[in-house]
Structure formats: structure tokens, C-alpha cells
Length: 214
Image 1: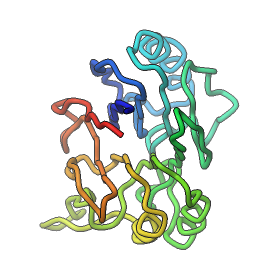
Image 2: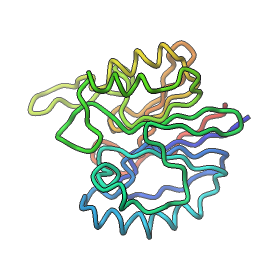
Image 3: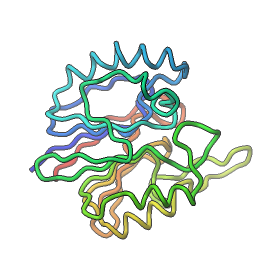
């Protein structure tokens, strides 16, 4: 049995992590108040590095999110950190195949934004034998309800292509964030879908890390 802890959208907050086998970090971990490459590099190499080194996890796996601009715009400047970073790539832990990708639907020209046609090509890269999928944005209809811009109400903002790929390959667990208002755990024909953001719509750190056993 593997104990998994998952978090997303910490935005500079460094939450207390319970002891676990795997810690999954689903993007948007850099502080939201300064998106400059120089600041993100310094923060990653000091504060974030120190936090990672103290975590009670046997293995830490992360992807970037739309706010983590250094990973897209200046990848050679990203420090070598004590974790496994996935970007359209995979790793394994105790027989579990774990795939990570940072891409999500286009919104305000942030990092790793793609339109749906290009996203479908990214989702096609996810291996069919994936057990755990780490993405930044949600699949359509699951943890993806966000406020409409300049109007009232909410709308689904997740990727329909991602949902189709999940249905096709049926991983055991899919962890994501991005949509702060969509936090929750959902079941899709036996696949656990988890929006594990730790902040709410006002970027307040109000949620605890999610825990799973596989």
C-alpha cells in the first residue's frame, strides 16, 4: 500500500505535509506576488529548496503550473532541486507509473497555455499504462467550475480532450488544481479525480493536503 499526499496551487505557501511515501505537487507553487524569472529562481533555490529537503516524503514528484513561468520561459535557469520534475514525462515508484504534464487550456497568456487542439496532442503522449496522472488543469466537468469573467455565474473550464484521454486509459488517480473554486474529490468509473488546491478563490491558504492510499 502506498500513501500519497497531493497538493496544488500553494502560491508561495509551504504547508505542513504529513508523512507519506509519495508527495505530488501539481503546479503553481511559486509566490503569486512576483512572477519575474530572477525572483522565481531565487525563491526556488532558497526557500523552496529548504522546504523540500525537510519534507517527510520518500519521494517528491512535481509539475509546473501556469504561474511558474521560469519553467517555460527560462528552463535552464531552474535550479536542480531535491525532487523529480515531470514535464510530459514519467517516473515510477514501487510499481506505480506516474506521468506528469503542466499544460492547461489557454487563459491570459500564462505559462503552459495551449488551445484544445494542441492539448489533445499533449494528452496523446500520456502512456496507456499510467497509474497516476499529475496535471495542472482539470478535465472538463470535474473540479473545473470557475467564475465567468465580466459576467455572473460559473462555467466549466476544464479540457474535454483530457477527460476523453482519462476515460480511455483509466488511471487509478488523477491529481490537479488550477481552479481554486473546484477543490474536491470525484469518481469517474473507478478513477479518482482530485482537485487538490490548498487555496481558495481569494488565494487564501484554507485547505489541508489531500491523502490517498493506492
